[in-house]
Image (cartoon, rainbow, N blue to C red; front, side, top):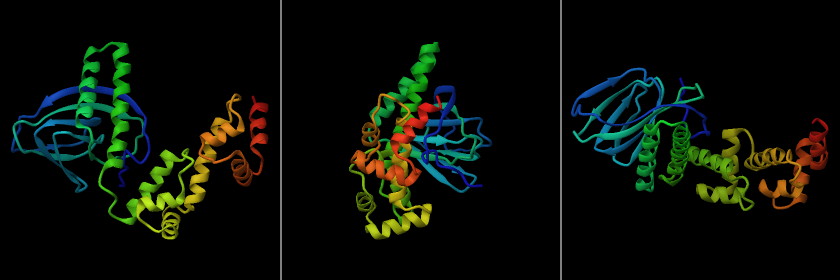
Length: 267
């Protein structure tokens, strides 16, 4: 069964179950875990430990790492020293798909350390307000994992580079300066070859994918009466209202003005 990466898309966190600071004293012993009861983010405070999963994936985590443990995962642990300490948050993603474990290393370890300390403190207070803050901090941690990936080692094959380029479009489509040429340059591939590889992987040209992402956002913005068509265009990454209108009509068969009018007629 294929396992999904939690950073392929932004997932919804449904519930926080527990936040605990712990210390596992079982040094130099092989420990088996079968069918983990929840998802978890584990922040390693000190020491190191090797995790081997049933699908053959192996990680060694150490101080400063954030480790994602999936719901119902099966794995063995081997703790290398007696000083293996951590803070973990058990929670639930609303997406029921099977996910894969992963390790992330933040560029600013002190910042991540502070976030997990804050998460633990908010959870221990236990008030309604602190639980809301707890969820906010957990989302902040989750969002930083995306940046850990962006700041990590460059993709080592063309398939990874194309996947990274698609993620970049998903997150930066609203930037007017974003272009296929700049994406190809980031990937270290010629623009012609980049277009070919992107189309082979996603069955759509990168230009079409970028324009579709921008149009999709513009359509959402056009639901707000106080935003002009030019506002919607510029906030979605189009360089001008004229270019936006041409692309919109080509894609939907009607002008942005006609589309906006149809929205309010349905209300």
